[in-house]
Length: 124
Image 1 (tube, rainbow, N blue to C red):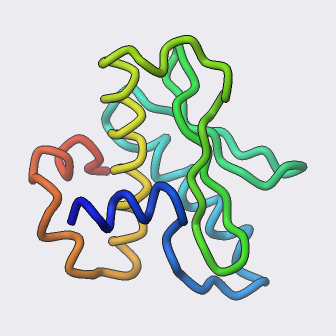
Image 2 (cartoon, rainbow, N blue to C red; image 1 turned 120 degrees about the vertical axis):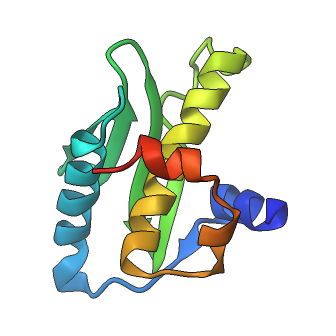
């Protein structure tokens, strides 16, 4: 599973979304993040076509869809908190939230490796 997670973070998650449904993907992932019972919130930036996942203090992760992949990007490439363990944990939890969102539409064997506690954090 570790290799898959590294691949997802560095290369993206292979998934085909029809062109006329990409906006729906952005809307649904934003809604999923915002309705979850945790401190994260999501904002969709239509001009740049990405969803930003943050809490009230820090931006953690961007996700975008391009070339049949969901791509993950640093929210801010010059962020001074990247080496902070709490920042790293929260960025990872934001990634898990997007992964669980994807799993809710296209279940895979990846679900078995995600702890129930993470499902609980992202329960709607």
